[in-house]
Length: 304
Image (tube, rainbow, N blue to C red; front, side, top):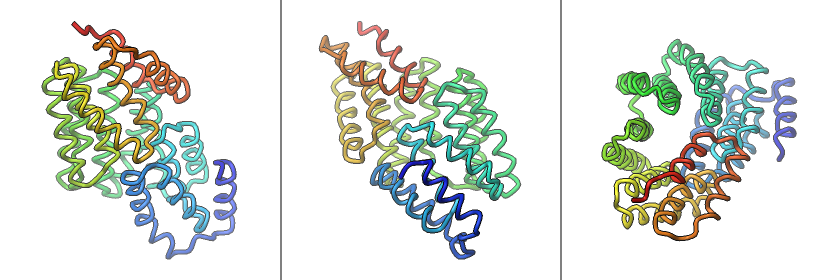
């Protein structure tokens, strides 16, 4: 179903109040189930699940799940349209905060780090007011992401420390926390630390069976192994990541993993132009500035 049609259907439901009180109580369960499908069975499975629930119940929470699925697969424009629709309809403040959180990630992907940070900062007071400790933790990590990718490393590290303190009450998985520490270490050219943190991230995601994030972490491990000189093990981890990516249909992550293949092939004297073309196609389609920066890094990397 097209996004425009889906929004019209949800808009119709909102006018006539078709979502029952019982359905509203189920929204967290619906959302968690959909996200689990995305992480374990692939993006399309999660989006299909959310779309069906959104149509059947008129639930804005399920509609937000569709937006999250679109963002996960790299469809930033469609994800943003849905978030703007939800905010315009002004449902419960917590869902508006969720949309601001997602818009923060969309902005970061486009390289708009200050805009992303503002979205996170606007969402944070709502979560604090409602004592949603898990969302406080994740949103603080979002602010840290804005800083780290914007090369404000000291601020980024301070927000990481704040996030860890917030997680004392939340008890959330630390996979993203360690991932961000790996990016911080990489940005400061502490490559051995970056590798160590990426391995910690993988182990965290493995604890909860988050296959999507495990693939991403394996790709990171492969990348750091390459640039610390272990090409054989780096290629092994990259191939492991690729297997999960193919099994789950993780389109977006296939382009990030291609960064590793560019580095491996280029430094081995093998043809790599097809990988570059593939990555540039995705950058042009999604405005993914982080991926563009990584591409420039591997194209200019000194293979020695």
